[in-house]
Amino acid sequence: MAMKVYANYLRPPAILPIRYNKPTKVRKFCVRNCSSDTFDADNSRKLVLEVKGRLKNEYHELPVGKNGRDDESMIFWFLKDRKFSVDDAVKRLSKAIKWRQEFGVDELSEDSMKIAAQTGKSSVHEFLDVNGKPVLIVQASKHFPGMQDEDEKLCVFQIEKALSKLPEGQEQILAIVDLRGFGTANADMNFLTFLFDVFYYYYPKRLGQILMVEAPFVFKPLWQLAKPLLKQHASLVRFCSVETVREEYFTPNTVPAIFRDEKATEVVSGNQG
Image (tube, rainbow, N blue to C red; front, side, top):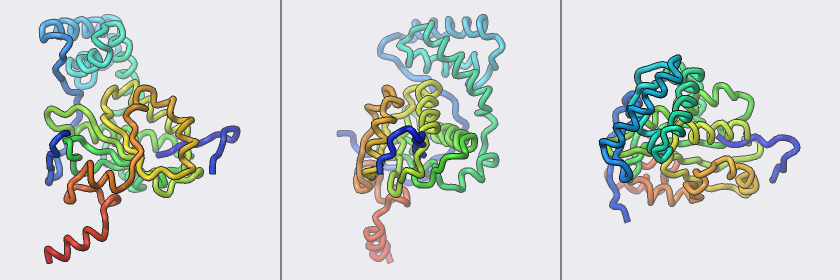
């Protein structure tokens, strides 16, 4: 997933590792509850009920149920994101729930996204990283502008899928953007704006880190255009090498295929034989 630059824009040429050796089971995503250092359970509960009541009174037309206006775990998550401001949480939640309904998030499925997923633009890795985070992988060189609707739906589907793999006690995902082979033909500012808005408004604080892998020279000036769109997520970005991905985020058995050291893999396979 990369960026489309309009014609008038410049077109520049110590945590102990936790090993996970088995694929995690995918379950239907629902925003998780979590503890807070700021509010005790009683106060948090009161605020959740206050937001829940206001959503019912002021936005009664919104759906109920999981990820709806009466989903208390979702309400708590947005309260936490908004530093327990009831007014801010109500505003953000009403917007997020409306968006989910209009976008058709709950209708996205493996079957409906099968053809789009086969392009290889993005995928959810079968293993967690060494810190227990689900991993969303984007191959920027496979993205081309012109399929905005399909790309947006695939993007949201993959985010939901990654979040469905959250293990107990984990709240965030790792995003890896493979920039090898990226060129100006892959650039798509419209899509990038959509992507960052989705995480900022509808999946707040769900990104733990964003790895930009092997960024080419042509990407660096474009990054200066994109950086403001990231808002607070800009501090989560780390530019790194394939070697860093292999050595710091995965074990030899869990590293994604596109980042494997083929020579090392051959040696290991030979020794096992």
